[in-house]
Length: 224
Length: 224
DNA sequence: ACGCTAAATAAACACCGTTAGGTAATTAGG
DNA sequence: CCTAATTACCTAACGGTGTTTATTTAGCGT
Image (tube, rainbow over the protein chains, first blue to last red):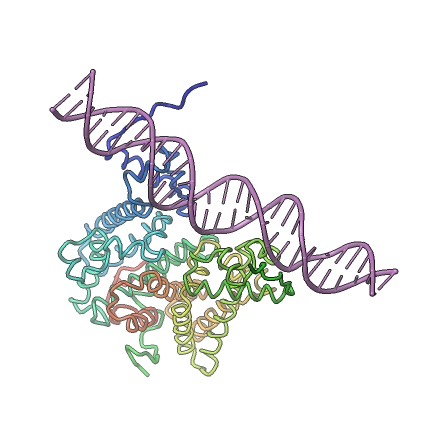
């Protein structure tokens, strides 16, 4: 009978890489719920307890995944707007890129934006408004900054109906998030037209549901 | 030493009520993650295994909670629009009621609308479009129907920029969901003005981000 | 070649959802 | 009223989870 394979010692850096890689694989494969320390360890070829030599706990592994998520998101957003000068089109492309990125990374998106306290706060996404975030901006806050910046451009040029940039950026973000979140959670829902829904959501946020001049009682822009 | 307290047998109906009540209490108290069969059982005063006499599994308990959630949501939406005739104001009130209800039941909302496959599909919310849902509408599909109906009124009266009622209802829903979902998950996020954000989101969906006549390249309403 | 550091291990803890099988309380039938 | 059937409930266990402790041992520096 073969004795168990000889214990191999790897450099901490290499093992960390392996562990994160295995976690990511299980992650996007079977979904966040089914990523366990034991499965990660088996994938890597070590015992579950060995992981704790390299990560304080499970959260610490997920934290790395979250950071990578924000890093890739930032790159996707930046690439989406880089070759465009018109502010509104920049904003539209940023939203579209955000939605596309979210929908193509559903498990990570769920972890970051749909799990209490896992993403934003801990990864320090926190809109670049706090002093701390302004000093050492995280990839997350930079990602939000892309959206925020696009909105700011439009506001500064007097293109918008409303002037509070911060509030507008949050509202725009919420709209995009609503689409991503809903389609991820209920991907079996009988959506009439997913692609059309995305376009309509963006258009609604930009142009509104109503015909121009259609009167409506509204707290922010009372017409009636 | 006192022998263990005598075993008390209750009627299945009464026990079911107790179990669901205990689950709901733990639910909104400690959050969905920390609701376990053992804790429910301890709260009720029975052993964990006894629960399986009344519910097939944990999901079955959550299912009852989901049904109640939809039932209460439907009532909240109905009450919000009952004394209003103007279509747009009915729609606005329905959205506001949806958001308020979600934010005041964060744990249940998370379970229903932010957990894969738990809510809509299984509770049969499924927009009242499928034949099955039209025949025996669930509380969930009726709740969506309130939103759907309000949108339909506005569309029928030619008040809207776009004519696809189904798509519009989904987009409006996504917008409201975005707010609720984001504020629930990131309730520690430095929102500049939560109340203002809700109003702005609704106004954005109705009136749009842009000044009237502000040109923008758009897939749905090209102006440039 | 030796000794030290630390990566890896084995074993255990407390928790989870769920199941099998035995006990006993309630109820139906005679 | 006594018996028999039903079934609510319990005890014990299984395999899973994250994590901790004590121990072994690989690999590097002297």
